[in-house]
Structures are given as structure tokens and as C-alpha cells.
Image (cartoon, rainbow, N blue to C red):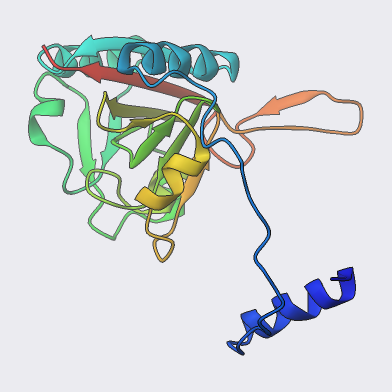
Length: 212
């Protein structure tokens, strides 16, 4: 089979036309992960890769979570914190800052004046140090996590930690609005001067939460 035949065959397949019998699918013997299939090792790998992307990583148990969130916000000097409407209420049980529930009235301009935002996530990918948000439970709208300068994101381990992108994709709904975050927002100009906070939070703090 020539390259031309292969390309035309893929076009026919995309159009829903049956492929000729001589066209066989290419073998794809890719590894789905390069990490050990062990929860503690995956969590350590995620921690290292998040930190490598300059995220601030913290660990705690689910019992300690409310106090740790309150501590992070107090250390930041947070006076106002935006939260998804369905964030578990006990997460903010020790927070003294004013809470602004994302009820649909928080515009970009209002969120720009908010000190911090606290959310959950859909998944975290250990091999790439990536947090995935899909506007699911406890995450809120995409706008909520792109405008405020300080984002505290809770990752529940082991159920929300996967080893690799190939293992993450089947667990995500492609119809949902996904945001993939690898560290705080950053960009570099032609001289490679790094600037953080250009199109997302300048500071990303990740809480890796394990059962007590």
C-alpha cells in the first residue's frame, strides 16, 4: 500500500465510507504508561512533576484539608475567595475570607478583583504534572480558574490520579470544556524572558489529598 492509498483511505473513513478490504489498520504498539502501577509511586511522581512546573504542592489527609485550605488562603492574605457553587462545603469550613459563589454573575471584571479561587479537578496526570479541569463537580466554569491570580486546586488521591495521557483520555468526556494545566500560567518572549500570569493564575497551589 502506498502513502497515497493510506491517506485516501483515512479520508474515506472520516467521511464514513467503508474501507477497501486491502486496507488494514496500522499496528500501534505504544506503551500506555511509563510509570509504575502503584498509587504511592504515582503520587510521588505527580508531586515532583507539578513542582517542576513551579506549582506549589502540598499534601494532607481529607481530615486536614479544611485547615490546610484556610492556611494557604491566610498566608496569601486572601480577603475574597471565589468558589464553584457545588464545592464541598466542609472544604471551606475553616476559611474566614469572604466567599463568592460562582452563581453566573461573576464576570471577568469581578473575578479580576478576587484574591483567590478554590476548586477541585477532574483528573491529575502523574507523568506530565498536569491538572485537568472539565467544569465538572466542584470545578465551576472555565472563567473561574483563568482570571483570578491565585488558584488552589484539590486533587484526591488515588482516585483522581492517573499515570499518563493515554490513561486519562478514556476517563474524560470530549464534549465537556476541558482545561489542561501544567503549572502556573506562563509565556516567554523571543528572548525567553518568562512572564507568569498572562492567561491564567500567576500562582497555582495544588493540594494532594489522601484518606486519613
